[in-house]
Picture (spheres, rainbow, N blue to C red):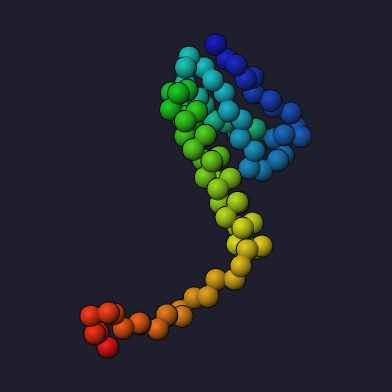
Length: 90
């Protein structure tokens, strides 16, 4: 069963970097408009989990970038002075 028909128009074929994902017989395929090549990515369950993980990593990265842009400045390379302990270390 093919859930996603390939979209092959002149407009899409001219776009670079666009990937079309298809599901057939429980396997996920990737293809590129204007190309006769397609690649099996794996079983639907495995690919779905990998895609979710990838999207979560992208989201986390974007949040960290936003936080670092707007958060307090981090001072690098500065050590705290060592405090003597109660045992008489100097």
